[in-house]
Image 1 (tube, rainbow, N blue to C red):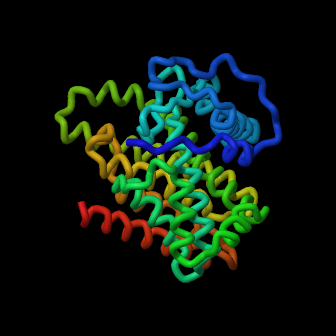
Image 2: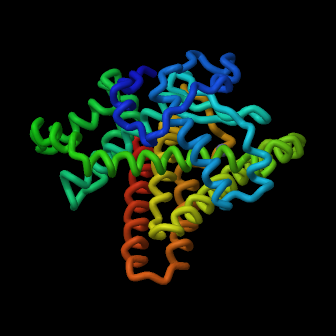
Length: 324
Ligand SMILES: [Zn+2]
């Protein structure tokens, strides 16, 4: 699979935090896990912001249990370009490897979701659907990168080049795009850290002797638990502000990225992961329960947003499967 990394300039634009970090010696803890080690500070700074800074802030704020933090605080990370593996994975006792193409695709999805709303209130997911479909199908034109696919989709849907240029330079657009992308990174990071906090390595050891079917069920159960744990943390964090179910979009983008791999046998199989549809359905139930627990005027709007988004995405997955 070919799909160029996003240009550094794009990521430099994104720099979400204002803090300049010294380069950590812990980065690239095991380069044997990488086909290519990504040293681009733009990628590494973004991962660090969520993986280290956000996690530490949550611990300081008391949103992670002491047990959670003790198991997690010394873990490090690497950013690799693993031939568009489109996944992050945990190296127990060490840290997490993030695929740079996956990070880039999460960013592109954030842009597609925001841009879709700018050009059509009626079909706000059209741009996102086009982007995800192009990658799942490995359609021609991927070499140009996901941002070029988004731009082309916008032009096809009647936007002028001047509109697209103006929109992507608009500070409100950029703020919305960053907010969504931050949710994707946040969910991804907490999902991996939750595997550690929930002692999933020890459980993996215990389920080894099970037969294939039982082991797969047990492995998938751990993925649901890590998703749930990550959502609970993000919702608890969000509850301090405006109770919005924005975490749901982090799950959506992560699962949409997984669907690229799930639909492509030539990419590494993910049988230990639940299907994208099962994952999004479980997350939908969990987020709807979170919204139902709120006593606020805006809760019905959030409920409708999450249901509408779930319908869109489950429909897209069904369509992708139907044409396999
Ligand atoms: Zn996982």
